[in-house]
Image (cartoon, protein in one colour):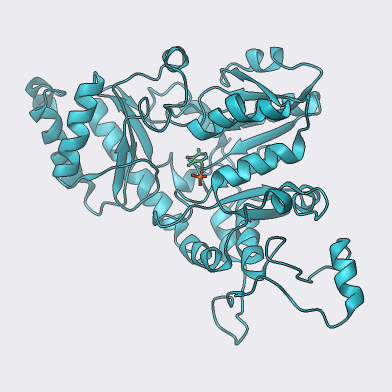
Amino acid sequence: MASDFKPADRIQDLQYFGEFGGVNPSISDSSTYTFLAAKSMMDTFEGNTEGCYLYSRHSSPSNLYLGQALAAMEGTESANVTSSGMGAITAALMQICQAGDHIISARTIYGGTYAYFKNFAPKFGMNTSFVDITNLEQVENAINEHTKVIYCESVSNPLLEVADIKSLAKIAKKYDLKLVVDNTFSPLSISPAILGADIVIHSLTKFINGTSDTVAGVICASKEFIDATRNVNDGACMLLGSVMDSLRSASVLKNMRTLHIRMKKHSENAMYLAEKFEQDGIKMIYPGLKSHPQHALFKSLYNPQYGFGGMLAFDAGSLEKADELMELMQKRNLGYLAVSLGFYKTLFNAPGTATSSEIPVEEQEAMGLTNGLIRFSIGLDNDIERTYATMKQCMLDLNILQEKATVQA
Ligand SMILES: *Cc1c(COP(=O)(O)O)cnc(C)c1O
């Protein structure tokens, strides 16, 4: 059964009034805040005053508004916005773990997160085992007495593997671990906290902000956890300092107003291209296709209104072919050869040599990340049939598709 959770309605139902009755909340343009009584400053330091602002690295009205909208979207009690997705991931993990602790992570994750687990966190005694997250037995077998966290992406980067969040949550409960899920690829369509995740993270840089003009992140979790990350004495967000600027926060909140419309269009366009090119004989990787190994799983987890997301991938045959195709597609204005995702224009890159280049070649091979793989973040193209025709012509021109295949299309 797919979920009946309504994330976009929950965002819609929030009501904001600006300082002068504006329909957008006023932007807090201050790093520090005055206190009328000296004692309330002391109490605020000790965390005993609700609704008092101290200093904007701790919290600011604009950041709290954005956090509130994201918590509503994910169905968590609270949320804390950060200056980047990596700022959210590193702070959340360092809040949970201490030296000697062990993390179990999906092996197909964002390259930056992989590099953090593999190269950086061990400096602080935090060690990670990488597993095939679709193999629940392997996940359970990797647990040891020091394990604190199971970490995965709902839909993984770049191979679009879908994590069985419900089952992973059961394993996490059984062993008293925290399940941390990066939901960057599937905002609105998958709601990890509703499926049992303890902590949900987003890079807001991608679909949620949607305009490729900023880097931002969020941690969504229980009030207890979020308050702990902001604690002036030992809170990871407060002390590591990856705070979002209030001006940017206000701008991300305004972009969130159209997220549901954008996600539906990204999904609709990606589904159209995936189906068409699959019919043409290209081996497409898209969770909306029956040929995707976790298609049924995705359907058992998602909020159907938002579809299967805007990300798709396929193998162009070799790195050379992939490079040629991407250059040609950019020349014919189908999109940009660029990393990142969630933009109005299609973005594409070959992750083996770009966004996943932190992952060693042998490991890339083990996980099925081939050199010719192109990852697409499908844009909001108004006429996707026209896009399909132009893209297909590029593939025919480069012999990635043969004329034979076009006859039946
Ligand atoms: C981009 C990305 C991140 C990192 O986010 P930044 O905002 O660039 O720091 C983390 N996870 C996933 C899945 C991403 O795509």
